[in-house]
Image 1: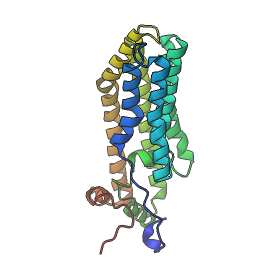
Image 2: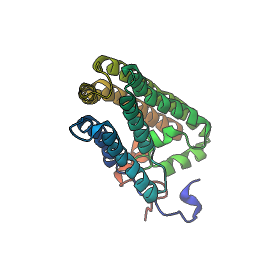
Image 3: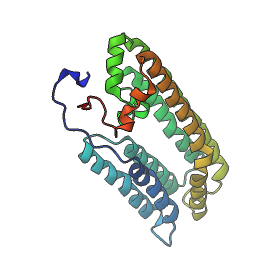
Image 4: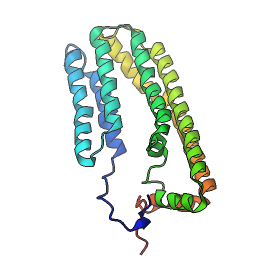
Length: 250
């Protein structure tokens, strides 16, 4: 529950650097696969092995440091294994398009499916304690008896996040079919893969970011309504360096 119980809190879990995570789990492995897969360099097998080192190494390091499994590392590993496997087996490009759509679909399903658990993923994605003062939110919910309203807000937010993943899946599938014309495992395919990666920011990431921001705004406005707190209180953790619940007030 809240920190007002006076009990001792365990040591704070170190925060993950999101830029380092994206770099080592996605950007570097994709660059390795795109640039080093040619026969004059590492070849498909060598590039795949090197690409796997980055998310695997980061995931193990982050697990030891924070004692939590890193979702992005697991996703990065799965994506690279599938991409490399498609290239090595020279499967039809349709399989690559299916793979590109499958990962966001699985994530969206996980967000909705987690609603039946004690820790819905939407809380991790949109209600990060480094931004949201969840201590103040939890106390207000208890004081107002608004727990059911909060759970309903989590459901709506989860479906909005899932919608952004569904949009990403559809855009990924269409972009892959449009850009990838060559056979997997060829130099031309690797060049097209690089082009698709470059196009993914304006074509995929920006529209999905808009939906995610709308979901976050919906959650914040909903928190104002169900807790009776203002945004200045709800977002205090962000202004105070993410002190989170139970911060000392002197």
